[in-house]
Image: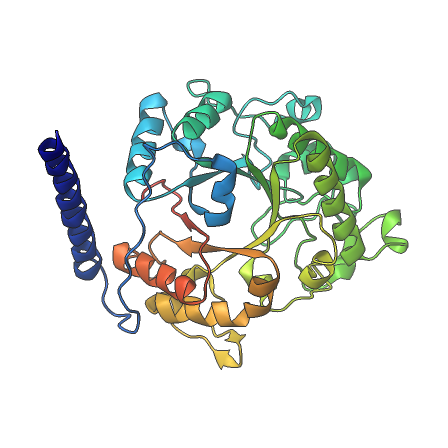
Length: 380
């Protein structure tokens, strides 16, 4: 019996040794080698076969984005899960509401149905998706685009931002319409969608587009009567505080995060958008901040930490390292979750295993252990 047990343990040891060696070889041999400053990294392998305490994954969130509208059936979902489990992923982020206003699953909210916001995948119900992810020991995040919303803006123009010149709906450079943060109706619409989403067992809710749109001249917009006695910073803080209260009352274990676009975050506070992270951190309404560290999204020739960043996409390690240093204060004050790039750069740079690992390495060197990879085609 002792001999047999010894052989079993020896076999397991040798198997793990070979697996680790193969993994290191993969990191060393694959990918674009133009970013030579980063040392090699040995990521921990996540073993989903062992049951885990899913809520605790929040503290070691290593996730990926999943566009559920691109899943055709259960087999697609199972293949996606098998792929990310092999790569040590422990969390998945899906959209609750896109910037278009579409909600990609059935929801009971009557206003959403009136708007026509629901575009459900009949072959793959959301409850089945979340249950399957949880059964595979995966933590599930849900992101909601709050006030950037084409559908609701058109159906409820009184809730929307309109032009000062003619009262028609205002649209941003991409043609998108925005709900008005000052509008009580707009805020209630978002709150009701979040309340319904909590019933689906999301482990956390992430708010994106929770602010006012960026524009050259804020006087081009009608903000409504409420704006006369409340500034933008306070309106946003009040909205996020209300969302935090809703979550604590109905689902106290669910986390709340805010996603601040990098292009705005490097110059906060910002009076036009109303984004002021320092003011928001005075509350305990939310649990973490997200922003994109994707090198391709770093604004061209932006000055960060006194240095002008150029060719950021060609240097993922240096780019992410610089951002870590710039955001050091926030990193020390609250859970800070960077979004990493797993899609190819628009200028043709391939973001393969090497360039993805380079981004992670810069995070680890700055004691950041949480991140989310984004590929819009669900390819990881």
